[in-house]
Image (tube, rainbow, N blue to C red; front, side, top):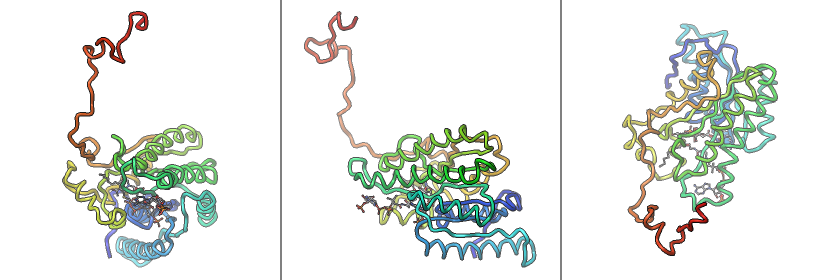
Length: 310
Ligand SMILES: CCCCCCC/C=C/C(=O)SCCNC(=O)CCNC(=O)[C@H](O)C(C)(C)COP(=O)(O)OP(=O)(O)OC[C@H]1O[C@@H](n2cnc3c(N)ncnc32)[C@H](O)[C@@H]1OP(=O)(O)O
Ligand SMILES: NC(=O)C1=CN([C@@H]2O[C@H](COP(=O)(O)OP(=O)(O)OC[C@H]3O[C@@H](n4cnc5c(N)ncnc54)[C@H](OP(=O)(O)O)[C@@H]3O)[C@@H](O)[C@H]2O)C=CC1
């Protein structure tokens, strides 16, 4: 049984309740596991209910084994609970039900982690309207709906903390322009909500994982294209990131250690955004320099008369 651990102190989140969208796979699963390890009950939500339920079964075993080992006993009065909810974050009513059923079941909602998301590789010129809409609806609108419902149904009156998982779109996102645009939208939404909801005691932050956090499900999304090996070679660390390197940072943002951190985007990317070359530009001579010589030539479309300059 694979281990679960944390650099944070055990019991840090005892009695707390979190929703983690996309919490059955990859990064979301690690976030859910670390929160549970720290005492938080978690609701994981996504579309594929069978995969989610099977993941939850495995997660419960891992956590109960880990907690028993750590306590040196088979029982733990703070044992955190794990629930699954089928939810497509693109559907407003499903998001409303996700939040209402969580509040109904647990009587509170302290943390909301907007992790669900994704995209496909494509040059911008080939993205269909439907494909663009699918990615924007998932990553931008879905995240907005989750934030809004968490706030309206619980956090407005009771406070809380939200973390929005975005992506490394610091320099644009060629080959995934739809997700770059959506995540930049969430980056900005995060700042707006941090201000609008400050008077309710709600902190809202974003976390941008570097483009190299390996999980089988993340890799499977790209079929035969070995995206992660490609990224690894051009990464300053010369390795891939691990899901627990993201979950620890999410736990930090949710914890009292970040009580004065809001409206921030934390890049967890091993400096990848500062270094990575992510798009090959073929040799070409299409970039024409502006020169005063050309500009002032008789008949040039850019030439100005003295009058027009005034
Ligand atoms: C050099 C670059 C380095 C990049 C590094 C990588 C960094 C990022 C890593 C990650 O994010 S890993 C996580 C990956 N996980 C996911 O992406 C999972 C979630 N993804 C999805 O659910 C889909 O990708 C989706 C498109 C967001 C939604 O899919 P869904 O199944 O719900 O939509 P559909 O209704 O099937 O499709 C709608 C529409 O979208 C177009 N489309 C979908 N997939 C592709 C594709 N592979 N290629 C081209 N176009 C696609 C298409 O128009 C679909 O409509 P139809 O044609 O099917 O009618
Ligand atoms: N891995 C990486 O290198 C990076 C990842 N990210 C982002 O991190 C997040 C987690 O990705 P990762 O764990 O790597 O990849 P995964 O593919 O494992 O995770 C994506 C998760 O999102 C869920 N999901 C997708 N669409 C929806 C939807 N419409 N409604 C509800 N749930 C949905 C999926 O579940 P289901 O199919 O059951 O709905 C799945 O659990 C994503 O937002 C991803 O884009 C960002 C940068 C880099």
